[in-house]
Every structure is written in C-alpha cells, then in structure tokens.
Amino acid sequence: MRVTNYGHACWMLEVNGKKLLFDPFISGNELAKHIDIAIIKPDYILISHGHQDHMADVIQIAKASGATLISNFEIITWFAAKGIEGGHPMNHGGSKSFDFGKVKMVNAIHSSSFPDGSYAGNPAGFVIESNAGNFYFAGDTALTMDMQIIPKFTKLDFALLPLGDNFTMGIDEALMAAQWVECNTIIGMHYDTFGYIVIDHDAARQAFEQAGLTLHLPKIGESIEI
Ligand code: NI
Ligand code: MN
View 1 (tube, helix red, strand yellow):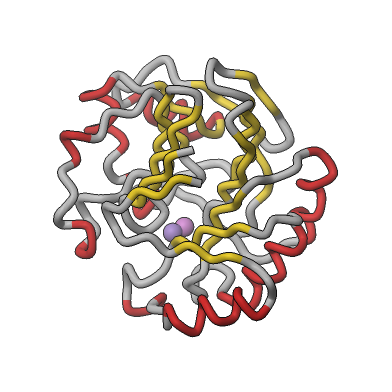
View 2 (view 1 turned 90 degrees about the horizontal axis):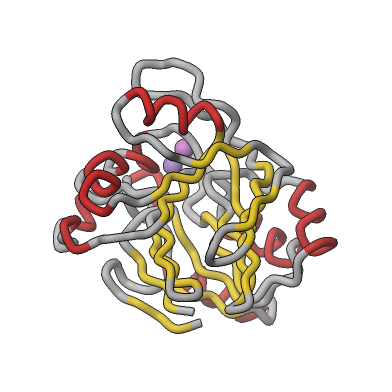
C-alpha cells in the first residue's frame, strides 16, 4: 500500500486503486508549504474530528476532486450545508463497506467542535480493512483502553498514531497503543507542526526500536510502500 505524508495528520493511502485522504490540513501548515493542493485528487476524504488542523482544506480538495466525504453525521451534515453533498455519515462502532474495503469508526479521546464553536460530534479514529491490508488511523487521541478492542476484530498491518504529546498522546503512550492494537509497524503523525508538539525524531525512533517496533517518520511530501 502506498502511503503519502502531506503533513500533520494528513495522509493519502492508496487502497485497491482508490485514494483515501485523511484529515486535510495543508494550506495552513507552515511545514507543508511545498505541497501543491491542486494535485491532490482523492476518491474519498476521511475526517476524524471537527478541528481546523484536520479539515481546513476539505472544501477546496472536495470541490476539485469530487471526493466522497466519510465522517461522523455532524461533520457530514455541516459540509453538506456548505455545498459538499453526498458524504457518507457514520458513528462510533459502525462499519460500512466501500469499493476499496471496509471502514469502521472507532473511539478517540479528544474534543471536537467547528470553527464557530458548534458541536462537531465526537472525535474518532478509523480502522480500514481491505484485501490490500488493514490499518488503523487513530486521529487525535489519548491512549485509551478502547484500543484493546481493535485487535479482537482486525489483524492490523500498520497503524498511524499521534506522537506529538500536549494535544494527543506522546511517544510513551504511542508505544503502549502499538502493543494494545497488536501492531508492530507504526507511522507517526501529529508532531512538529506547532511549537507545542515538536518531538525528537531520533529519540522516538530509538524508543520504538527498543520496544521491538518499527517507526516510520516519512518527510512531508514523501511516499512509502508498506
Ligand atoms: Ni484536534
Ligand atoms: Mn489536531
């Protein structure tokens, strides 16, 4: 599976010939100035929660690509009112099959509100199952016991976990999350974008290595095959 880092929590995953873009926040990211949003043409945009650092570029990319949004009911309804219609609403614990594979919306411990302060539903992560591989996109979350449910249903090939601390779990908790979801291959996200969440990359890699885990920290704009 091809995995491209567009910075912060924004990733493109190519699954069975379909492009899934997660949490688009590029134009407002100082570290992603070299990314041209116009070339990003996903088939689906998955949105974990209502914060601007996860959905600032949804409208522009959805309009240019015609991508289908997948998120919670509140976020899908909010974007429909802004002219991005045809999105697929879900809620926690629910699964739905699409043409690339199955999406399950899972718990995240965080907050979620729209820029105007209105209610954006509860924050989520996603578990994707497909015949090309299974992965977990944690979204913004604390370490939560709910992660232990995931491997009861899905054998993960890799997981995208936040590492930046302060707003989400940090490296120590991400190590435990990797164990709880029973996954040895981790892609780090949600770090370095703001001063609050700058991490020491070498220390992070070492911590994962010592735990017998593989940590990928691709550069912004870089793609890896996993
Ligand atoms: Ni957030
Ligand atoms: Mn965030």
